[in-house]
Image: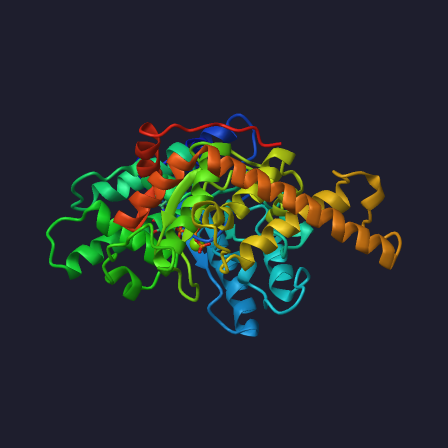
Length: 460
Ligand SMILES: Nc1ncnc2c1ncn2[C@@H]1O[C@H](COP(=O)(O)OP(=O)(O)OP(=O)(O)O)[C@@H](O)[C@H]1O
Ligand SMILES: [Mg+2]
């Protein structure tokens, strides 16, 4: 159906929506077979993933008149507006009621699963049961909606829409690039990796933002450099003032220069990540984020859960999924996180023999992971175990735990330095390129690695 051409990627979901639209449009063909049309569809997912876009495609493809309801009135008036929407739709049947952002219908400041608005929606859905009124709704979170509203018979289909990933992200980026006057080495794959985990709306915005930078410079073409600026500013919160200042020429043997420290610190993180999990660094920046002092390194997030190319009909809970994803980190991933966190500090000691004073958050992160390993997962023996619930820990146990965690941190730190020593060529090459460019993409890192000896090291 051509109405769905605006939705790039998401093929499995599109197929399902096309099937539903066909039932709505050609209902007689289904009636002949004595089958009932689905009564409602609920699309849910994070902001900007295309729920409203997909819903509007269904409306267009169904050929039915749609009656749209969004929370735009105070509570009492809004309840009446919901009732009116349904009664207008019933009078115009076959039709569609579109409840956009249904999880915002009730006040957000209370546990509102039994709020009047949802009770009204539910009663209205039951009221139009025997009419050809299809109920289409979108929501960011299903948690606030009452279970009875989500049940089969009211919303027969509940489909989760995820942020675009893999091929879908590349297709969406290519689509938005094709609408602009881009030039040069624009590489949608690199962009997709930098933008991993971001919504369709963010992909669209960052590409447009690149155009705004180009326009401001009165350039008639948009380049990868404009895109990088847009990305650093809108996605990674680097202030424009910082981006506008040209990268100074840096003498990388001058350890007193704060920029040298920033560059080697980030090169340390990137080197450890590329040795332990090759191809995972998506961006290394010597530019600082607002409110921060150093640069930053971004990695593939190893997203768990559904991919945008799959159809997920289950009603799942994003909050619980996130918690479970944290619990399901493999031991190798945790080791890599700890070693990677220590990479910045170790690089400065390794290269210049100096203590890096800007590593508080890296250290806290590493300590958190190692404490979990030692105390909750008993990686150093059962004698350090406590779960914080069953018993109150004695002073003596806590002292032993602290010692064990500190000893483990020492071991991890030694391992980090060992990896950097074996891979000093890569460390220096990343630092040099970063000092020249200010920011490196996955493609830059891949280029650097071609000319360096990378010594792979086991994580344990
Ligand atoms: N698959 C897609 N292909 C191309 N563009 C998309 C896609 N999905 C979303 N967009 C674009 O992203 C922007 C946001 O989409 P939309 O408003 O539908 O998101 P949403 O999920 O309804 O967000 P919210 O939860 O905030 O209401 C729109 O400009 C839309 O055109
Ligand atoms: Mg929307």
